Length: 158
Length: 71
Image 1 (cartoon, rainbow over the protein chains, first blue to last red):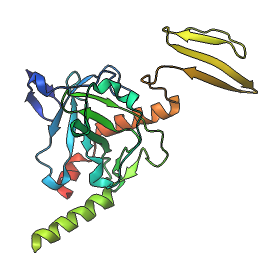
Image 2 (cartoon, each protein chain N blue to C red; image 1 turned 135 degrees about the horizontal axis):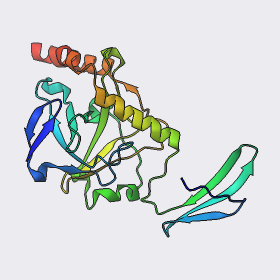
Image 3 (cartoon, rainbow over the protein chains, first blue to last red; image 1 turned 180 degrees about the vertical axis):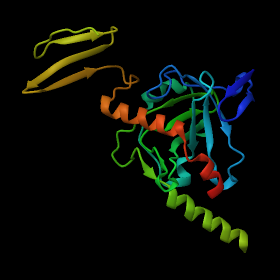
């Protein structure tokens, strides 16, 4: 099928690439089907992808692997909350957090409090809210990404 | 919205498997007990709204073009 998107124009999607959120995402319970689009215009070391709604062309969330911006990210989650994911093992589980990119990039943040958990085998997912206080909704990442870029450039230089 | 009056220790049953009990009433604060299956997510509304807002803000991604140039 072809998918109309605001950011990427028309994208060809095979049915098996769809990721199903049985409960929708938080605040948007009706948006249940997404595809993960990798943004190739952003440099490789940045690793930003987009969780693009199948139903809503204008709805795409930039997401990133939390370990890129927070090396220790190991929240406690009650297994029962992961029931929407179906059957999975640790190897199947993909964790992503949303990125907020305001006009002022120095104010970029990731939402560590509400990760998206994806069972890559069955392609089922959910977004949950963590109880733990240590994971903020707005975790600043500008300095972290900048430092990572500088390190990568230095390594390339040698 | 369905509005029901309840006294202390009275409860409501929702969908055969969720019980909401009024545990305590003190001035303008009510303590509510909820028994629900563990796979039913229960959030304080203000926390839920905060995450909804965060999702909305992420969708707008105003600085994405600038980000492409920077990193």
